[in-house]
Image (cartoon, rainbow, N blue to C red; front, side):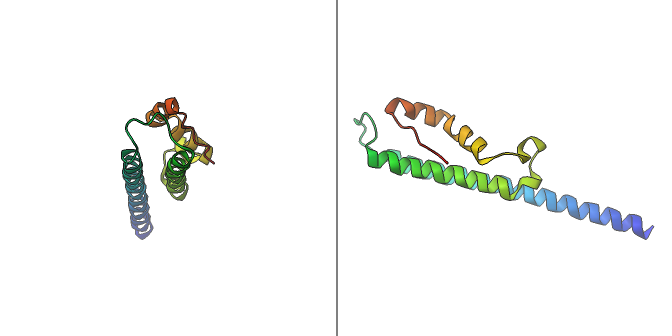
Length: 119
């Protein structure tokens, strides 16, 4: 009987750790998204509205924002890999980069010759 109770307690503790880590992952991704939106809006808001494209310096600055975003998303996934759904447990940095580059925002910016080389 003691073994059964111990097993149930350990199972409950493991579930609590799993749930806490999953929540931490979701919180981390939300923080990363919030930070990225703030940084990119601040950058884009500082541009001349009449501008037809980015200068080389502006492109480099914006791409560094996007690179940091992709890096942080991958770090969050990598650190919480055990708590992700099975389909996401094997996510690679390249998978994250593909998702970031295929976002609506990045597709819109392609018209302005903004194409970040992410690694």
